[in-house]
Length: 244
Ligand SMILES: C[S@@+](CC[C@H](N)C(=O)[O-])C[C@H]1O[C@@H](n2cnc3c(N)ncnc32)[C@H](O)[C@@H]1O
Image (tube, rainbow, N blue to C red):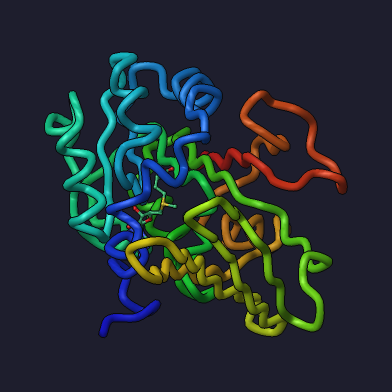
């Protein structure tokens, strides 16, 4: 069986339920932010998935292309109105298998942390810098690690409990590797379903160093898509790096 080291693993596990599971996530603030930066330049989404952000962005007339490792996720994108006309390469986002130059590359919803080592994340920054044109921008949306979520390296949550279903989220945290492994376990009339996720988180300062080593500089950092200020109480960040 494939595992976390296979770039397609997450998407292949989640594609069947992804849109339904994350139906509450509103892409409009991200689309507004990204459209403002894109102008009329070519845009690339790494880990485009089912097109949650790319489709409404393309709907604004922006030339969006994508990369994703999972055929199953991209099949869901293609089945949606407008999905078939977005060019998508099936491949590993750390390698950024695309021909630049792009004016904007973006990677949202913590997807950078799906690259499970510091080396893989740094490789991604270097390859993004390779495909960005002069003045091009790389935007990432990530959570700020919060180690207080874990008690002795673990966490258990009852995500949903109804008459006919229970959803548990079980997490283990490795503080040295900066890795979190999560199983979302659903018990319902059809049996037990496992949806695994592995994340390797990076601190904002660590991301800035990766960017710097790739020849990118931090231009702006906000705590969200509405450009709220970022500080030590922020649970997440939207960071804009620039290739000068
Ligand atoms: C959390 S989803 C995000 C999808 C979309 N960007 C969104 O915001 O809804 C993560 C996506 O990353 C893709 N993915 C994970 N590892 C990858 C890799 N190494 N290269 C390319 N895509 C990858 C998965 O297939 C999945 O589509």
